Image (cartoon, rainbow, N blue to C red; front, side):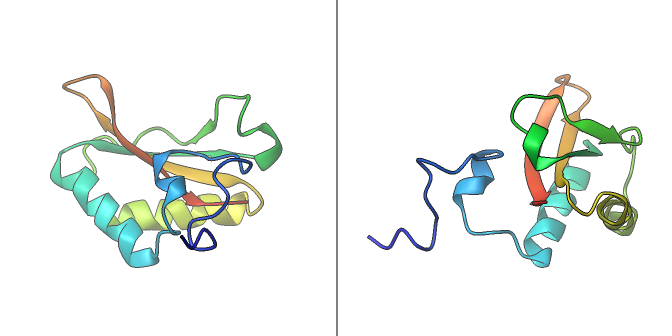
Length: 111
């Protein structure tokens, strides 16, 4: 088994389930955003410094984008957050207002 592709899951802190997969490409992130929008979930961006990412609630970048239907707006906000906090981890979540929970959440950038 080639463990070099996936990484050392036993010692490296993982941010979420997708962390065990190869890093998302820009196209993969766009597909996830499209999935969030297609399900009428509200995208939300969170960020945190790597030293605090395991023992603090992450700080939200603005409010969730309630009713957002434009992928470009979400991508623009992801980049704005990344420029403002280049050394932070960034996570994108999709909030399901019907079930009052996160439908999806994944790390977009690692600081």
